[in-house]
Length: 109
Image (cartoon, rainbow, N blue to C red; front, side, top):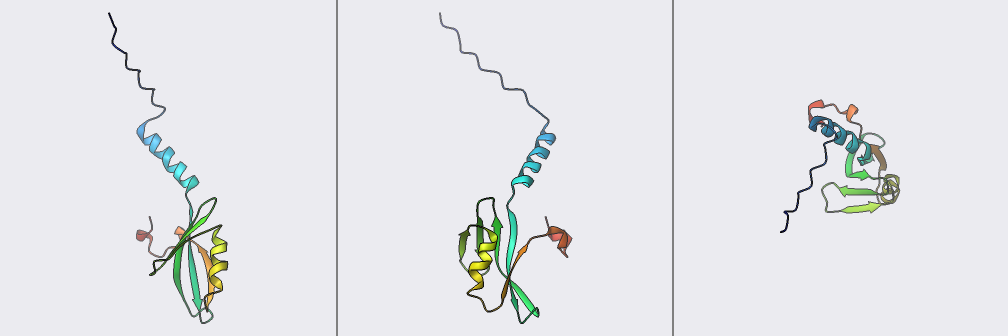
């Protein structure tokens, strides 16, 4: 006579759902890429515009051009600025996103 296979018991939970959500939030904050903008300065600080947005990961930087279907992958964010500074008339700035600098607090997540 054969015996039915027993279903293994689920492992015990290590923490509550809210504690786990908080743990995941800290994990994501620790490994999140850094957001930056490539900003073109015009007429010696009279005007500026964001020409691209990027994310810097631990091993690379990814770039998306504003208003154009251009994307790129670079070794780091500083390399993005170096590469594109040769093809622009104005000065290019690499600006790291700082949520505390936002003037419209309700629009920053």
